[in-house]
Amino acid sequence: MRGMGLVSMSVNRCGNEGNAVAINDIGRCKPITKKTRRKSSPFHVVAFFVLPALTLYLTFVIYPVMKVFRLSLFRWAGMTKGTEVFVGIGNYAKLLQDEIFWQALINNLLLLAFVVIVSVTLAIFLAYHLATGLKGSGLYRTTWLFPNMLGDVIVATIWLFIFHPTLGMLNHFLSLIGIEIGATAWLGQSSTVLLAISLPMIWKFMGLYIILFLAAIQEIPQSLLDAGKVDGAGRWAEFYHITLPLIRPTIAVAIVFLMWNSFNGVFTYVLLMSKGGPHRASEVIPTYIYQAGFEFHEFGYGAAISVIAFVAIFALASLTVRMLMRRLLEGKKGF
Amino acid sequence: MRVKRLRDLGSSVVIQVICVAFTVTVLIPVLWSFTSAFRGSIDFFMNPFGVPSPWKYQNFIYVWTQSNVALYFRNSVFVTTVTVVSIILVSAMASYAISRLAFRGRVGLLFLFIGGLFIPAALLLLPLYLVLSDFNLLDSYAGLVLVYIAYSLPFTVFVLVPFFNVIPEDLEEAAVIDGASHFRIFWQIALPLAKPGLIVATILNIFGIWNEFIMGYLIISDEHLKTLPLGLADILRKHHYTADYGKVFATIVIAMIPVVVVYIVFQKRLTSGLLSGALKE
Image 1 (cartoon, rainbow over the protein chains, first blue to last red):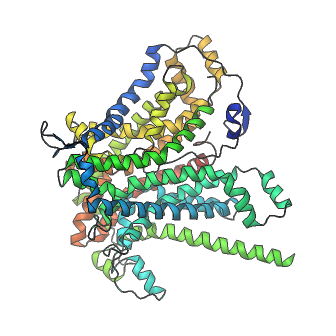
Image 2 (cartoon, rainbow over the protein chains, first blue to last red):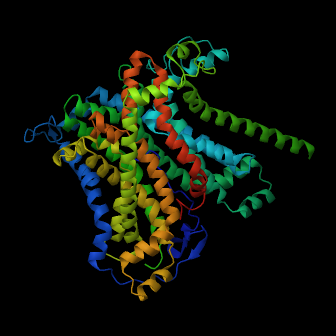
């Protein structure tokens, strides 16, 4: 739900040596002293602190997750209780033959791949140059991060008008630089609609990743870069052989978070900018789930689509979860 | 040597040009929205890119008084305030427990929350709708706020845990020796020390909730309960037919103003927090 999907992505350069070292609060490596186990806290204390969060989380996040799996095995209009019909894997079998589902899946993957590849590449490029102490880098940082604070609805609306065939800024700009394509309806033709939807997402998300890559690059010890210079590394060699390998963990986390971000956000962009059209050319998984449930009244079928998407996302995310867990636990003291 | 310096100068000019170009790309849509908010429909069609003539500030008066934008705005302020205060309190308690208390299942609990970072809300629309319907929470702020808290937990816990992690243990031990309870340690020692983290988490949650659309779209249908993003989506749908786009942009600007203000006030804290520590170890 977070519009931002902010992530912590510092490079754990100490992690190679297993548990012997951790990163302390100022990011330097320090040895963990022998772990001392504290006495368990009283139950009522733990319950007091944990239960409010846990109850809400279990009720509104975990329970629906479990429910969606169960739901996917039934045929149900979602309205009256007791009218569910158990169909086993029927919904999944139906999915395989549903052309709209495959279309939505492919659209979704294309959109995700494009957003992720463009944002990450550009963000690394800009962050790398910003880190060299470019004049005005503080101003750039502030400006570039700003779109990230805007809501998806606002961003989608603004870009809807940028793509407006006759009043939009894009066609106007193109004719200014001599590209006469007339009143092109970017959102109205199937060849351009996905591209048109991806641009506002890239525009919004990128700034955050520039900042996070910048943070990772700035953590690279100057001595390493100096050593590279002594060895006669040019800027490109330095980037390719020193910077890039050192920020690789950050890149991995960034890709996963960005995918999650785009997957969540795409619902709003498609709903407001193209409604999945023309002819399903911009239908994506979340909009199709919504439609299956609330327009076709096939809750079970919609749930089956959710499950498929879930499995895919979790497979991708599992690696990152492990990494994040390790970092959060390592920073601990006293346990 | 001179050739090399010239080449360096050349490449740094190119980089500056790229950075300026990117900055313009970021800014122009925002500036364009601001000027568009001051256009009448004729101006919008005749002159969509120049300085508005005349500056039709009446758009703002119109949307504020003649449509429900003022109501949406108040609703958004209310929902955001209640939600963010609750999120921070509930998450800080859970993060404190995960970080400072010793109990079985502590790591499992952290795993549960961190895993939630990767659950896209967009996949849970149908079952969540059913759960809310079972609890009779559809179309109510209670439902909206509880769902907002639940879905903000993973992220907020993720931000806060490292801050509780680095509180020196000596302080805690001293407090225990003085006979302070865990509740007092949490309230009087841990919370103040975790303040930088609480601030970053608060800012990010303010943006997140103020802008939230999907859950609102699912839960709220009563016109009187709609928040700004929901209202804006409605207005967009309506004015697409009347083609009075100046009013759409006036609404956008009204929704953007609090974001701009909070961002300007806190941007130093936010960027430096993101750059050095707040979201890292």
